[in-house]
Image (tube, rainbow, N blue to C red; front, side, top):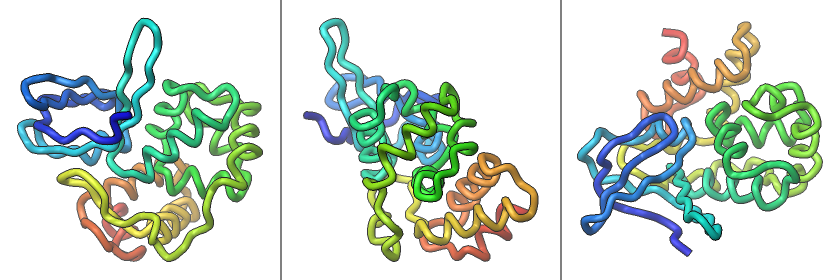
Length: 201
């Protein structure tokens, strides 16, 4: 099993990255939340990967953090009706912190807004993953893991900042995207207050 790939980032789009390693160019399918954290083309990058082997294809999926990859695996292994494409779509719409929070709180409405996910699949996400989603533990799960240009904002600060923007009238997916961008700009360890200020500036 290939668990990570480290090489030169040749090019990237919101859903794909080409990583060159030992003269080979590997196409890696990535969610938007990982694409946002990639360094500039020509830079060294590490992606945490999951490979799916089929008779007619071998498909490589890559993520900015181990936590993101593990959540992807959790969805495709335990949720009926969620395949790799659907899982990438879900993770492109919401960060893992927001997804875990929505599953813990049973927010079917938010989950159902993800691409290709209807109410029934959103309900299955909650039912089948609620017991598997860890409760916040002071950020230990979100230690710095990844690529050049990645962030390690504590999950609680990220969630609290999103909640604050939602209280101000933002839609949850828009709040999530704004806080992700703020976290990228501010770097690791940004506080809830600084994330909110940056997102609103």
